Every structure is written in structure tokens, then in C-alpha cells.
Image (cartoon, rainbow, N blue to C red):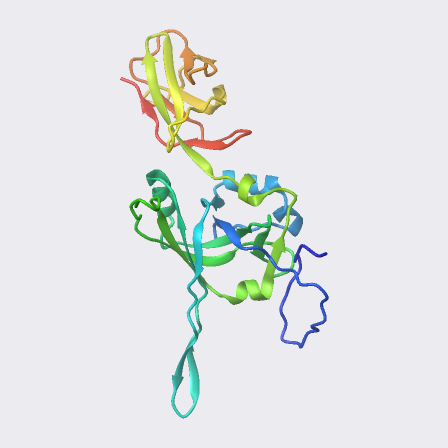
Length: 287
């Protein structure tokens, strides 16, 4: 039984309608947005997890959180009717949904409000919905994102962020839609970058102890190595030190001699780890 639509292109020529089985995709349960120039060179690349991870680390792909209450809000074509009927505007393909997310995550999503970006759709059948204009390169559909005001929690519902997606052209998927089913789960494996913060524990002329915490949950991150952390003077000069990995309480330590009273701890960019990827969003300034 077919499970993929990896080749699709509409034409104006009358087509045959004798397919014995229909390839029907599942409902969308998660989205990932992408920059307008992002695309995969081939279908094979679009089905490779490493391709997705690479573009996430480069911030070309930004996975959204799980969605709830997905709804269709399409509009109809508009017409002027006189002696003759004239189409004045094409109807819009519009989707609305909610994400039950905390304040930092709301602010992350809201940073894309009003932006035009590409959109990949992940279904509950482990599928990726995308398009290919030339039958080779794969990319997401073009949409404009509208992020609404965060709605407070009620007794019967968690707080949530409403989002509206307006597709630039509803024909994109109808004409050039590709439905890919990789051998991994897009909803599980395509993860966003986690914001992290540094919490200073103690400092002296020979030791600096600190934790690195996930910004939302404040859970400790214990997998960082020496190259993941930058320790410099306020002028940006590197401070010579030894690095001690996190202990059972998630505390890292830098040791050395003659550490300055003031120093700056920071990350060294996006930190790709086996379990997740992190980025320290604010430097820690010692006093």
C-alpha cells in the first residue's frame, strides 16, 4: 500500500482518475517554520534527520511547540456581480491553533509575529508535508504568522498562545505538495534550541563555580564541556583556567590562579548535545 507522495505536480491537462488506492495524509499535530531561503537539495536530504538538525542549529528551521485545537478558517473568493460576475480576490487558506506554553516560550513564538516564513507540517502518521516546485528541491509552504495575546489559565484550561497562519497561496500544496515519511519521527526528533542561563554559585581568585540551567524549567544542564564555556575579562581577553565537569548537583567549576574580581562567563554559540541543543542567552558578569 502506498504511504508516500514524493512526486506531485499539477498540470492543465486532463488526468486519469483510476487510482486503486488513495494516499491520505494524517492530521497535522506540529509545525516547524523556516526562513524564506531554506530548502533541502533533494527529497533524500529532506528525509534525513541530520539535514534537519543542521538547519535547526543554523537557525534556518525553528520547530514550534505541540499544537492544540487546530481549526480551518479559510475565506471564500470575493466577486463583484454586475451584468457580469468578476472575481475581485482569491480566498485565503488560513489555519488557527493554540499552544499551551509558558511565558518564555510565548515570547519566543511572539518574536515571529507578522513575519513571512516557510512552513513544514508534521502529521500524526510520522509524515512531513512540504512542496517542491521543480520536483527536486524540497521546501515549506509560504505563510504569514500572527501571534495573538497569551490567554490566562482557567480552571478547565491551561494558559495558551493563539496563532494564525495565513498561506500565501493555497495552490502551493495542491499543485506541488510532497508528503514524505522518513524512518524517524519528525514530531519527536526535530527539536528546537533550548535557551539557557548561567547561575553563579561562588567565586574566588582560584575558583569559579556555576550552574547552567534551562531558562524555562530551570533544570540543570550537565553535559557541557570546556569548549562550550567562554571565560574572559571585561575587555574580552581569555582567562586561563581548568574545567571541571558538572557534579551531582549540576555545579561546574573553573580553577586557576589570579582570577580577576570581574570576569564574564558565556556560552560559545549553539551547543549541540546528544539529547538537546542549547544556547546561553545572557552572559554572567562577576563582581
